[in-house]
Structure formats: C-alpha cells, structure tokens
Amino acid sequence: MKKSLVLAFILATPLLGLAQRSKPDAALLLRDVKVLSADSMQGRRSGSEGNLMAQEYILKRFREIGLKPFNNSYKQHFEIDTKRAKVPEATNLIGYIPGKSDKAIIVTAHYDHIGQRDGEVYNGADDNASGVGALLAAAAYFAKHPPKHTIIFAALDGEELGLQGAKAFLDNPPVPLHKILLNVNMDMLGINGKGELYASGTFHNPELKPYLLKVKPREKARLVLGHDQPDQGHDDWTNQSDHFRFHERGIPYVYFGVEDHPHYHKPSDDFENINHTFYPDAAALVIDFLELIDTDLQRLPLKNQAAKPE
Picture 1 (spheres, one colour):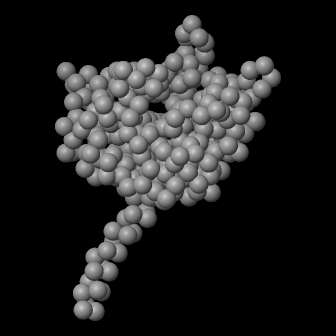
Picture 2 (tube, one colour):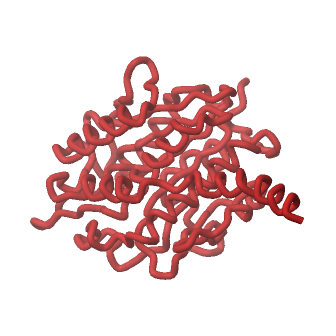
Picture 3 (cartoon, one colour):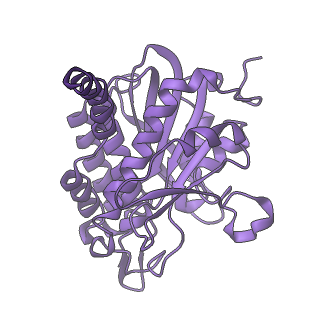
C-alpha cells in the first residue's frame, strides 16, 4: 500500500510542477504596468516624448529577459499618415525566442495610448500597459522554458490610431507570412470585478476552442469565450484591436481582454485601479494557453489562406 502511495506521488509530482511553472512574478508584472502608466509617460501617444520613454523602458526589459532582435535591432520604424493623425516615425518593438521549428507564434500587445487631452493625462494602465506587462511576463517564461515553435513578441505602436502598428508589422514581417501560425493578442487584462478574462476569436477559428477549454481557471481569474460573432454589434471584438489585421490576412488569432469598464479611455485608467490579484492570474492564463498551444500546434488544421506562399 505504501509503495502504491509513493508511486502515485512520484507520478503526480511532475504534473504539479507543470501546473505551477507558469505563475508570473506578480511584483514585477505590476511594476511594469506602474512604470508604463506613470504620468511621466504622458499617455504614450504615438510620436510623443512619453511614447519614446515607454519604448526605452520596454527595450530595457527585452534585453533583461534575453529576447533576440531581428537584424540586430528591436525597432521597426514606420510612418502613420491617416486622416486621424500624422506621425513621421512610429515604432514597433520586436524580439523573439527561437524554437526548434521556424514556424512562428506572434504575441502582440500595443504600448501606445491616447496621450493628453484638456490638460489631463490618459495613462492607459489597463489600455494597454496591462497587455504589455503580460507580454513581458510571457517572454520571461519562455526564455526560461524554451518553446517548440519560435515565439515573436511584438509591442506595437499606433493601435489607437487605427491598428497602424499591426498593419506595419504585417506589411514588413520579420518572418514570411506563411510561417506565421497564430496571433495571440492582449489588450486590457487588468480590471475586472468578476474574475473574467475573455478569449475572443473561436467563432472565426473554431479549431482553437478545444485548446482554450483545456486552460484551467486560476484562483482569481478564469477564461470565458465569446465577443466574436458578427451579430453582436459593438460587442463583437473582431475588429477592435491589433488581432484584426492578422484576421484580415487569414491568420488565426485569439484576443485576450476584459469587457469595457468605467475607466476605459478615461483619465481614471490609472495603475491604482488595476486589480492586483486578478491581473497576475489573467496573465498566467494567457501563458498557460501559449504553453499548451506551442506544444500541440502541429495538430491544428489552420487555414491560413492569405498568408500561404505563392
């Protein structure tokens, strides 16, 4: 009987270890959000001095984590020239962790916000310093647990000006489009009183649903699927963040985010309103999904028609 108990413990121990591996450093995660959403960053509007300050902080964190740059640079410069704004030099920040496969998973989160209006700073702690913090936490995890597939981490600029950073990324991708298997986008992960983090995109990519359903709830956060059906109007999030540009190209995506809250696009979107227990668990859920999908991605019948080589 004792031998059976010992054997059961030995068999269970690796599983317990695996379940606990992806717990991000909550203090570091929250520090990243606090720094990026400080008044000194001036709301991080594309082209602003505060946006440049945010870039420098993110680049410092890329180097600390050990992300590799493409062509000796983390920066992808591009121009924003639309009716809404003109920014001569906006900047995506891109690094990667090589895998055994040259096929890539693209993890995105925009770091820009809407800046200052009428003398008030819109700090964008949830929108989207929280997504960038989770991106950095995911990068740190996979730097210590090398992935099967190459994972590219892209902190995108110009989302608030029409998803311009995602468009620039795909117009000049660091790897051929046909090698991109999936986009995982994070935009607003930090404020939710019900412990709900939405995973949007399975309506368009039903083959991803079984994998999302395997992600077990954390203590303070659980995944809820939805917000991706055309008949939902504004509650359909398909075109509401950077993942839409991937969807346009036929690249499967999952968008992780919370429902709108009173601080959305308001000066009150400050670090103090981030839920300090929900947010680390929400970030952990994304990492859990990434680990799961990285392990099993070859089994997915992904139909990336627009990105296939000619």
